[in-house]
Length: 413
Image (cartoon, rainbow, N blue to C red; front, side):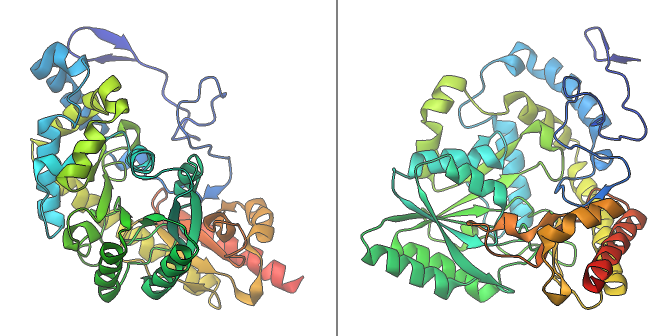
């Protein structure tokens, strides 16, 4: 097959086989995606968007238009803070979804939220500093933190989100021991892995605590666009005193993770420090061409309708997953996420989710055991994370049915 892109004709890679919509059955030297789909397994472990729902044809046209409009500049080192059209798009989206719109000098474009987190930890910590994290938390953020010479200290979490009393106690205890608590990493909106949203009262308590203690909150806010029952609540960044919160945002969940087009919002001084980092001085702006492609497509006005379609689809998939849990594992407990990608299931009878996983996979479904989301790996023994975004409702219901069968077998044994 050939694809016309404007300046010539490029031979495209063969279409992946129908049994592998992501192409991940190819040998490793040909595989171009992270996901490793396994035949016969409905794998609810991967917290990814369904790629077929993302606007690939529209982005292909936008790429052509961007390369024509910007010419060689599209292939140059980009402006350190990111291209102004993309920064304007970020401001437009946060004006629509949050309660404070950042100024242009409060935004830095990053190559994914993960790179934003790495930049923040690199620039705002020194060796030996303490970083607080709610527990459970996003396990791959912990891996990023462990790339740095900091100490990671968990803080208790419940059905209302991170416990601010526990955070205050941890800060007091660590300071009394001569330790410096520099950052607090949290996912307050449509949490990964639990789907829980931090309750309103605790949002104000948390930012007040951070301000009074001189701790910078790193707010992972990548699911903001995906509120299914109601809009996402105000971000911590929007209600905090400038300088006390750095927010990480992303378009990976709505436009495409492969673009690595994301951003952070911070006070102007912190943003300037990040823009002046050696990484950006050497490499220029992050995700320069993807950001120009996205802003070119966004200028058509298509993004809000695209997100609305995603929300309808993912809300139906969430509902199908929760309904199947009620039918097939009624004595389990699970969260009721208002948005995002995940629900958190606690198995009945004190079953060990890690021990159960091989039996579930033998029946044809997969998940992530809860222990992976605990800093020391010693919590969440009976819990697991289910992602509901990559599969249609019937597949999700079947996956949960298979999980229920594995649970019943394990309880009989």
